[in-house]
Picture 1 (tube, rainbow, N blue to C red):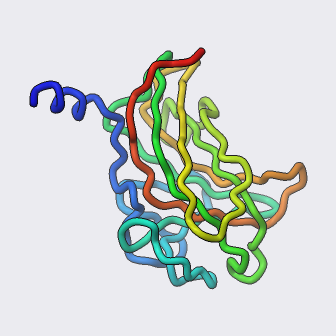
Picture 2 (tube, rainbow, N blue to C red; picture 1 turned 90 degrees about the vertical axis):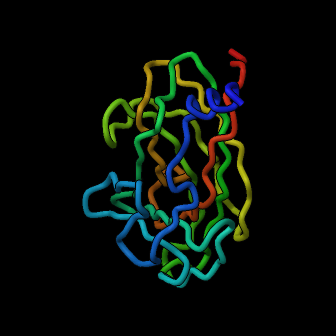
Length: 183
């Protein structure tokens, strides 16, 4: 029991990992903060022609990229990601080909470690193109090399060299375990 409590106390837990909140535009779930001025994520489903049911809970997050901007949100972890340690998370990702009628292009998720609120200090993981319209679970492996990071930032980003209008749907972002590093 003591070992389990010690492991739990040291875990980089995510508060509100299923992005639970009242669906709506330009809003983020409790415990999450937007990182781009004038570009706030949305709580889904039900807005911008997005109808996919959640993979976990009652709601999820949507992020869009545009020709001139892209959305991101962040959270302060219960324990920082430590330089030289390796962590595994899982997240469910999808995209909506009909998002708001014109934001239907494929995008990717980038996960950053931050030393300060919304400061993208080190890129820790990229999903690559998220092409599925149904939820797909991804294993997210984070290995900070430059610093300890008390903040984790989730950012939608382009997969092509030119900028375009795309979207990403996110749900069920959970800490899995600390693992031995392979570098």
